[in-house]
Length: 234
Ligand code: T5A
Image (cartoon, rainbow, N blue to C red; front, side, top):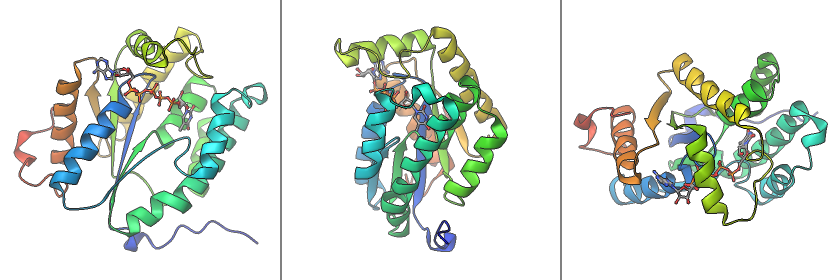
């Protein structure tokens, strides 16, 4: 019988930081900036990764999901595919990096499944909780930065970045879907304030970066020694 192997949580010495938010919120931009800062300042290794994807097999599943292959099967089947990718990503990349003491910066994780397939897609929250329990186990983020902005702004940014290639599976959803997403991420932050910090992502990239650094310095002071007094500017 195959059972999930989560490893010994006591061995996980690194820090796990996830970035969440709607389309075009600026997560990739800000992860790159924070990684550069942490590499210079924290004295720990930094692992930058993303979901869906992050390991070769999970990247294959990503291509299918963003290409819309699973859409006709509905949000439950899509959630299962996101989970299949997540299992491989956790086993191959995230848990080994944490066990080496690295800081893992991950572009999207469980909250995207809760928001996209759950709140916006209509999947029962009880199903999502059960999936998290068996797929993620104790490997929960230490800090989740929720980049918040009006969906119209994020979609316009994503369209510019896409360079006319057209919207992917989720970008192509109606505005109403993206409005529900934003509300879902903010509800997650209200429900788990110890884990989550909301960042106003509608500002210019330097202002967003400053807010993120302040949140990291306050919530995980070991990562940015000496910056803790800046306060949580989220
Ligand atoms: N998904 C994912 C689920 O449905 N369930 C799940 O469980 C998971 C894990 C992933 C899709 O999968 C869905 C969610 C997504 O739809 P993706 O391509 O990784 O697809 O999509 P996103 O994560 O949304 O990535 P994007 O690239 O669209 O957005 P980012 O990373 O948030 O934004 P970024 O940094 O690429 O910036 C977008 C553009 O805006 C500019 C950038 O230069 C870039 O051109 N920009 C700014 N412009 C002005 N002001 C700022 N502050 C700016 N910051 C960035």
